[in-house]
Length: 253
Picture: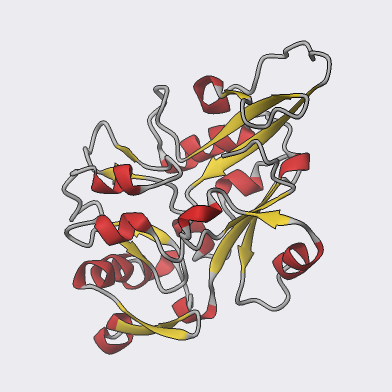
């Protein structure tokens, strides 16, 4: 990309000014290694993600695929995506029992169903917010939103100050134990810029998780949003979450 296009590009119908850090990071992805993103046009896409709660079977395939694809540390508690199991007794949505053994890396142990109890699985990942708190608090601009709607981290600038980790209302960030820089879901940016889907969506056996492009009029997400009851996590935070859940239970906070 030339510098004028790189620093001042169109995104979601508005002009977006990129910081020098963000511009350099996008140069690396799109210009520095053109074979990884041949002909990819930043302003032709606005990425989102959909999750159908009823389809998730808690198998952990998404977690394993993500760790393998993105070299996420195998030790417990380092996840770019994970799955939680909710167990709700009767109508008591205020006090659900929630577990996520090793982030569901190996799925879930079978538990006997109690009378008047419902259970379901909730996959979680970075929400790639349009108004990201993590972007707002980063003191050096290492965390930034790309013009196509993906929140990324330039590790060469990250100070490891943990401000973004604290600011994320979804618990989706961590400090990498080797690089000591912020790490999170990138929506498999290295894949989607080459026309592929995310590793987690590709390996989901039930089709519960799907990458979506809001700028593509033919993308199934438009029917998904139009025809279903859609929720986002923590709507009161007004983050502009682009991770849309179908039939998200009221017990999920």
